[in-house]
Length: 230
Image (cartoon, rainbow, N blue to C red; front, side, top):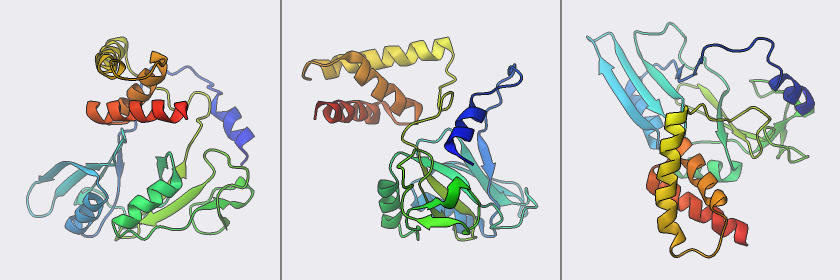
């Protein structure tokens, strides 16, 4: 599967979509709910809910940092075998940074790898050591597993394919986000060197869309401006 094929298929939509279908939850089968909860909490994943209904049913929902999609695991709600979910993707901006962060939390994470012939498979066959030789977005990976053996693929995405990663904000939500960015940019602009407002706005709004707080997004905007001035 080449990037040319991926790009071609990604931009062809045979039938216009009429209803939004937003993937928001992935079910992860585990054998020990408390152990799984501790593991994902150790990674900094947000605990959204922990429901119980009698001794035979429990449901936990958690969300990775910056993700619009959450995971659910628990007891008595899925017949899937613990550890049977393999190769769920976690997209990151920088593989080395992501690997280092996982290592600080005591997680065994693989070395960086790519797939021979761009043929992605969800087992360890066909993996070649090192980053994608051509440095392409989407094609460099690392992996780790939870205590049950459910595996995750860290995928580095630096440049998105056409039509991917575009926000589904409605007009009212976009207006509010722009107003929020304008307010915080005014504070930044008072002391910042001369710059184009669109650069700061873009960094701030992307950070907010990725789940960052306004304070974290202000920091992201400043870091982006420092980077482009170098």
